Length: 603
Image 1: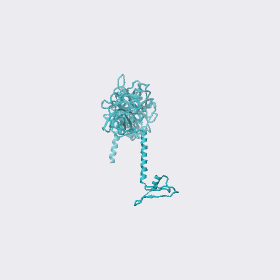
Image 2: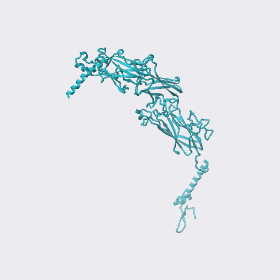
Image 3: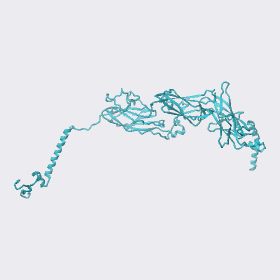
C-alpha cells in the first residue's frame, strides 16, 4: 500500500514540471496568480461552453481551456447585460509550488505570498464594423484608479468584479479581461493573467418580464397573442381605478441593466405621476437598476387633480456605457381614471326562493340591459302623476329605456340580493360607504331592507390561480359573496318600480332596478260602524240593565228576613214600639210582616 502511494506521488511530480511549464508559458512563471481562483457568480446564469455550463474560470495559476485568450470558446448568451465574477485566494500555493520547493527553487519563488492583491484590471472587446462597434464593455471598478483590491481566501469575504455589456449590434464579439495580481498593495511581485470569451448580442428586451398585481398575477410584457387569455386590468381600455400601480420586473434567464424608469402623464393638470420603490444602485456616479431572476418592484403613484381619464407612459431604458450610444427604450402605456369611477370587480344577482331562480343584474360593475333605472321622463307606475323615488335617491348616472327585465310577482314578499366580489377585487376589498338605499312608489308598496350585507373582509384561501406564479397560488384570494334581503308590503293594486342603490367608497354608486307587482290587500269583513255618541249611550244602557238584574237577583235569592225588611220598610223597626207579628196558621206558617203598637199589617 505504501509503495502504491509512493508511485502515485512520483508520477504526479514527474508530470508536474511540464504542466507548470505550460501554465507559466501562458500566464507567466509561478507567482501570485497561483493562488487566484476566479468563478462566475452562481446567482446568475453561467457561461456556456461546448454545450455545458462553465463556472470555474481560473485556478492553480492557469485559465480554463474554454476561456483561454488564445482561443476562447466560452459564450455569454443574450439576455446578460452584466457578468459578475468572484475572486478568491487559495490557502496553499498548489502542486506547482510544492514542486518548486522540492527542486530547490530560489527563496523568492518558494515563499508563498502572505497576501494577494488585484492592482490592475483592464477589459476590451472586438467585433463589428468600421462605422459602429458591436459591443462596448466596462468594469464596475478599476483598481489602477480606484485603489488595489485585496483578494482573500474563499472562506472569507470574497472580492467581486462586474463586467458590463452594452450591445450596439446583433452578433458575437470577443471579450478579453486582463488582471494583474501582486503580493502587496504596492504592486510588488506582480503577475498578469488573461481571460477571454465570446459575448452574444441580441437587440431588444428579450428576457425581460413585467407583471402587475400584488401577487404578480397579470403579465404585462411580453404580451400574449392567445385570444383566450383575459386582458390584464392594467391594460383595460377604460382605465384603472387604483391609486398605486405596482409592477414587478424580472429576467428569469438572464440579467438586465436598466436606467432609472421614467413615467409621464398625458395631462399634468388632471393627473400627476411619480416613481417609488425602485431598488437603485449607484456606481461611478450613475444610477442604474439591475434586474435578475428575483422580481424587482417599482410603484407608480397617482395624484388626481380633477375628474377624467389620462394616459400614463412608463419608459424602461437599457443602461449604456458611453453617451455616444443612444439607449434602447421600451414604453408601456395604460389609462388612469380620476374621480368617481366604476368598481369593476362586483357582480349582483337577484334570487327568488319561490321560483328557485338566480338572475344576474350587474356584471363587472356594469348594470346589464333591463336592470337600469328608467329615465325620469319615461318612468311610469300605476299612478302617472307620481314617480316616487325615495328622498335619499340622487339622480342616476345612467338610465335606460328598456322595460325592467325582472318583475316580482304579487305572491312574493321578499327578494334576496347577492353581492359578489371577484378574486381580483378581494386583494383590496370594497367598503360600503353608506347603507344601501331602496326607492319605490310609496303609494303602491313599501320596500325596506330586512337584512343588511356583511362587510367584505380580505382573506387568503388555497384556491387555484392559473395566472399566478407557482409560489403564490396558495395565497391568492377567492371570490366572496354577501347577501341582503328586501321585503315588500303592498298597499294597493299596481306595479311599482324598485331601485336598489349600493354605495361603494371611492366609486360610483351602482343602481339596479326591477318591478314589484302588487294586488289589493284583503280587508276583514265588518258591520256598520258605530259613532262615538252611539257607543257611549249603548254602554250606559247596558250598564243600567246589568245593575237592575243584579238587584233583582239579590232580592229574590236572599234568605235573610232582615234584608227583606229593609227593602219594604225602609230604615227598620222603631225601638220604642212593640212588635206585633202575624202569620198564617198551618204547617207552613210564615211571618209576613211586623209593625208597632199603632200599626197592624194584614196579609
